[in-house]
Image 1 (cartoon, rainbow, N blue to C red):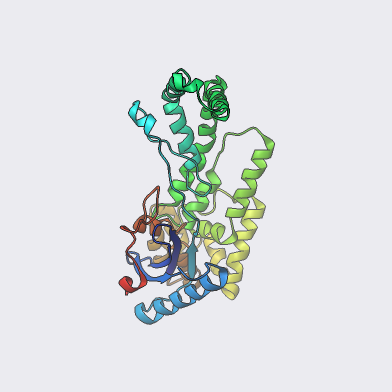
Image 2 (cartoon, rainbow, N blue to C red):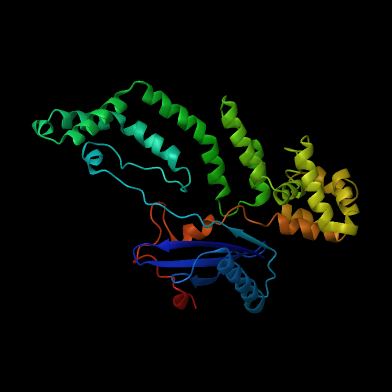
Length: 333
């Protein structure tokens, strides 16, 4: 099985929790345990202890052998709103957060949607008699804001940012699906096409792609019968990384990988059918190629993110008020 781990801080109750669930190929994901980190530092040493305990609990209580851990410990920020917009027919403002998924794109969309109403609100404040009596600093801020929001280029900039962000946001949302695995994620990252002409930004995007596409993701994609690494076979660097990872895992059984790559034996008929689910594909090949089949089944079962934990115990804008977060270690037991 695969451990999925995530943690968060409840600012209201001043508590911190780390939760682990188990994901397997044959059963629904299930809750393993919760650890109270309120008085602990969420550092590498403590989290390593959590993983060690989780592996032991999985083996002792559920007879599950853990071979992978999926983790994402990003903090969560709170979205804010502005009452004036609501009163004037607008929508709640979404502010960008440093670690929140797609929040910049959503902030741009929200700003574009509310732009006319925001202009109206600022204009009304500028024309109020009380504006003349305002402090100099407040006047300057409002005038500057009016100039910025009235700039004709603002709409174009917002639209450009949205177009730039949409492909990335689409990828993120797919990778956060509960049934999305690392071979699926590798496929989506390979297909990522960000419409940019700036060479510096292109370089940043490519560095990010290279960082994400680790040997284990590439190997999982290569062993997925629907993907077969077709997106990166022409890329010597990626392909060699995938092959090297598989070679090190198989050792003396690497001839099984050669059979898969050459589409011989049972692989010839299975790959010709083309519509066999990955799990069934490798189960049918297991009698003839046991070592490769076991490796493939493990890799294609690893989830691409830990987002499902946060969906279980949080909502989009704020994680765990004191009313919602009742999953203490004591209650979990």
